[in-house]
Image (cartoon, rainbow, N blue to C red; front, side):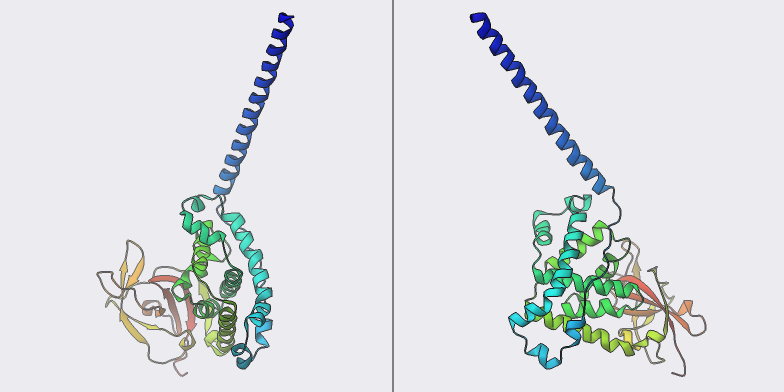
Length: 305
């Protein structure tokens, strides 16, 4: 009898130990799967970019009086399609950036800003993404108008570089973090998007016919005199009119342009005419925002215009 009890206990211990080993192996397998997933995400250089889905039509039908008299419920209903398209975009971007090396360098607070977007922030994301896509198609006024209307003037270059083909996890996270720090109520956001659309509409009469090409950013040749002419307003490009001018110095450590050789203040945001690259009436205007060249516009200037 004792022998039977001993054998029963021994058999039970063998089964328990076997189960524990299987559990350990299973846990290790799960850990390895997580590691493999993390490695796969970290090795992804570029994100999949969605097609733009923002529809401005509901705002095109509004008059200035309509937009000024919106109440909260009307603004919420007006923004519903924009929130929906922004939600799809937001979920897609978050799914791709979470778990990347860039994501893992963020603080807890920075991750919280990104993971807790409000409906209004998702709508802002949709508008900025659409504007960046239209700017990539040849009209830089889209991002300029969107950034100004939504209060992102200082981040113009960020959104131009973030939302494009070849978008990286780093630039997407930077844009998400920036939008995550901005808040507008439904009425304020509806008014801002209306202002954005009106700005784009007014740019139909802009010098688009004078812009013959847009090429990627490259260093601006510094004039020997360290002074340069520029236009602050996109709508003035292509016109044979007096330009503003400023001193300009390149800081080779960060490749940004300053008005002083001590590298204290950036040059004003604007379009800088590279006189050394002038060919006949074709000018190269280097678009500088926050000290950095973000694009180069090839512009024909009619001396009789």
